[in-house]
Length: 362
Length: 251
Image 1 (cartoon, chains in turn red, purple):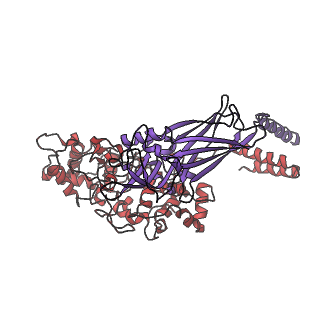
Image 2 (image 1 turned 90 degrees about the vertical axis):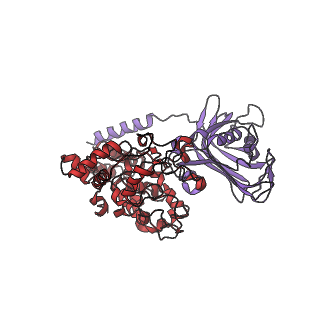
Image 3 (image 1 turned 180 degrees about the vertical axis):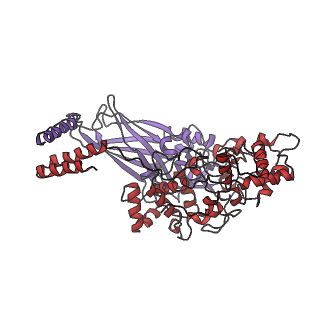
């Protein structure tokens, strides 16, 4: 608000103090004139590495703000989000593990019962089209409700959660700042969490520096990059190292129907029989930190994963064509020296700042 | 300076007031009352055994559905409720559910139109409030969207243990609009009379229609229905005759 505008307001107030209508109009005039002032250009809430994208996507109904991200971070780490107040999102999404939990099938939830699928890392989610192993969740604003409600995860009652948070002054103030409302709703909780998760950006690995400088790779890593480009980048294309699509990589040929078809992959969502057993391509960024691997965490190391592609791919009808280069023998033909080079390349996708540096959000 | 300010204010007054329509249609409110029935009798939860058109014996524990994008139509007028999402719930305590729409221009409405379910603009995200708040057990958190119609209960097969009866109908292709004629006490009577300020529209919800016509549902094959072809048959059933306006009262 410029000083001249304030002067005008004072002038109007002194002149027309007794006249309510004119008082309202003077306020209206002030708002009208203020609206014409150009907002000062704002610095982005987070910077996006040039090797990833130009800017951070943020939906119109939940624009990212510094205060929103900070609130989301507070919620993400708050055990009050679980029914028994003992588990936070961060219990199973641990920063040094790429925001995954390192477990095959997590038992860290409320009931301590093993979940049906392996905990996914949270990396560069702002750019993902769909979420979860079967892509059932359409956006970050909707994702939190699954772990919040699941009896084996956070087992929260969503009728109680907003009331519980409202009891704390810090939350009342922060929600008011971010959403301009005295109330707290489940929608606001989900939006704040989504804003924070959009800031979990990884694009500062050795690979990224190599892309920028065209230098810094060892001979082995260069060989690995070449093999990767030939064999893997179809489904794991840079810069995100996922194609956001669903593939059958020959892990299974029979699929349990139980638990609402949670192990049937993409079929569970599309009901298209050709999608049976297909799962979302996971990102390979920070893959060295996010073991074990696959939707059920069956492979403990990257070596096991490469062994799968070399020897264990099942010849199912919906197998991804990329794994059928030799119709006699599905999978990828990789010698042990080639596997060593590939693994060396995968190590260049590790972003230690992402994994170990405390976030700058306060 | 003083003259300038006065001029400015006057011009603002003119600009602000110039757009107001001096002729505003009087407004009233419409109350919608829903009565839940099974085979013409008040629906009883948890205890009463019912038989569907296929001869299957079952009980109902819970029933609710979304009614959205409510419109009232007259020959020359259309009223559309803003942010129109209502969870019509046969609660544990009452066989009746009602909601009231306020500020409805008093026109000679002849038809009521609404969607059963949640339209794609709201069905693709769960960060919604009011009746769409995910705390209402109508949100699908694993497959983003809403259950449009939820019926849960028990199915008693003749020669085995009781099984769950779970009808959770949703997904975009199952969002359907329904038009109901507003039956008036006398023909051509307006929904609002000159003197009245409120109207009550009473709607019967006949649950047996979900399983009966045109598609007879067989619970032995379909005791759990969520999406896909079978769900479309259920949608076909409940959009044809489950809901009926039985009276319109004016006060």
